[in-house]
Length: 474
Ligand SMILES: [Zn+2]
Image (cartoon, rainbow, N blue to C red; front, side, top):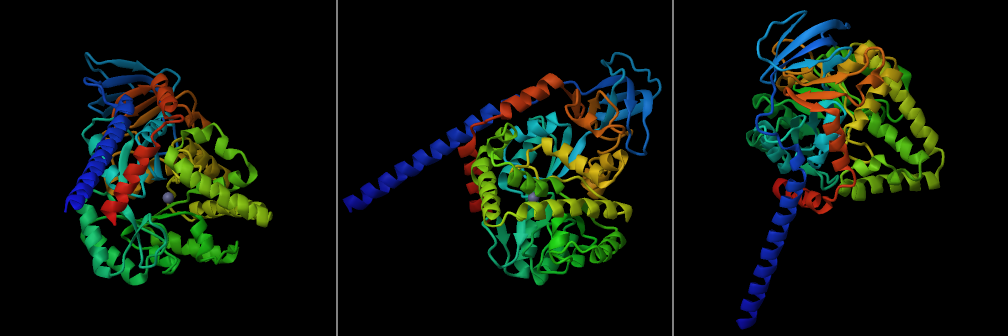
């Protein structure tokens, strides 16, 4: 008996120490990201003068205007606005556009919020929800931390087959319905369906999502036909490569593509988020054997860098060793992706900018400029490109409607840049000022956000949050 007691005591002590260590590690991580704390008395009321506005309601620049922002909301836009006792921001020769929206990200820590802001991204849609994202949403909504507006799906829903511990396996249709209800109650914004979802379970998810008024974001499932995703409840379909992998059956088949695009254009319910950057990054890994040691990679979350970036790099490196023709094949497919984007756009499909930032070697914030440059290369006009990351994104979900254009009544999520992005999209990089719910961040602050994210040491804290997800969501 004495031995049993001793063993139990030992276990209790070890568990106690473990819990204390976890709490301390998480508190230190929180402390280290305190630079994102919203200061008390932070002003979000002022008048911007002499500014050139790109409203994104039409392809135009409104020159030399004034914008009155009160309590973080755009109250007036005009040639001359008379307001007494208000701070003035003189924006002579500068251009004001809506903040950018990245519709496909995976967020791992608060440092990444600063990276999005420094790149002019004022809203993100996280597509792999975990309990940490619900806590983050609360902090953001209570205006405790400065952050892009944050929307998140629940965990990725897949079918009975095991396809990785990062997915929630569903076996019975009823279980699927219960999950949709519970995600709604817990505060997730959308449902994410994933590639192994079988028809009966997919049907149950769609049925319940409709009843629960939850939009679905679909990573296409290859267990159902591609056209099955053209459903009014599915507001967004992800990843251009899935068009090639599914309806085109891994062939760069232009004729078959025409059919798919016609079906897509007819459906009208769903936007399309191409995530060209994450696919092109396979090519970047194949042509640069030193990419993991690059400057940019220092901005990745350390857990992802250690696990995912490394694993992806090695997978493609080894593939290349076995068969060097892969390099050309990936490049050809990327080039074909550009053609698909052009045709989808011509057919009237709503394209929304999504990068898949946060996984592999796709850097949060910075990758949005790469994604936009690809749309331009595909043949979209600068205005059409900018729409994908502003008004198109905000139209996709009703809960995102209050952003994406510069109009009275919209949230003041704005960026101020030195040159006209409708002439040159690279003007959107390094904005001089970012306004997030009217709170003004100057270039100095934004550069500091980047500096603090570089080579951060929160590997264990990130791992704890990942394990928490496995315990709670499984
Ligand atoms: Zn993704």
